[in-house]
Length: 113
Length: 111
Image 1 (cartoon, each protein chain N blue to C red):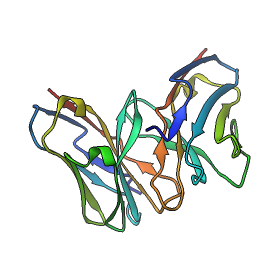
Image 2 (tube, one colour):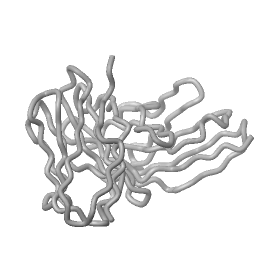
Image 3 (cartoon, helix red, strand yellow):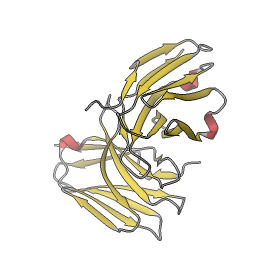
Image 4 (tube, one colour):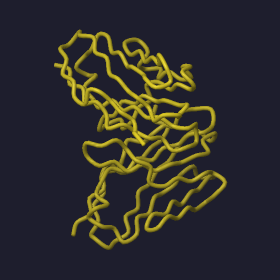
């Protein structure tokens, strides 16, 4: 069975650019999550979808971060415009439901210059 | 604010010792507490989880001790091995909200 796929694995952007990160969840999973990982904060929730509907939107990230789920097998995270403080690893995870195991992708490492 | 706190950023133990990683949470509505293990370059992977109806969960060398009244829990890794060297994340969630994670504890096991 394929796990969670994330592309690209690495992204370098100039300040002010728009970048789009992609995620394919485990087939059949209803829930999809985007997290940002930094050494200081750990994993911070960006967005949570259930059956393609947005259920939670990380309050601090609303202005420049937009996650979408166009179909049950594909999600994107757009950051517009990027800032150097956005440099982090962005993780996508999927799950059969809340209070069940989350399956994480390998992450996309974003560097904003 | 941080809803889940891990008391140590890093921890070093010798091979064969028991490593103890601590975690606390704020929201008493949380009822599911997984621990994830992460190796460099990989995403976190579920190690062991406990639900709030229990006070202890054991799986091989890994045990979670849970104190609902104090809103804290700990992960004990018995007979630590160098291969256990990784970052460990405590998380908390329920049926209404996505799980929240702590900042992680980087465990180093010295041979």
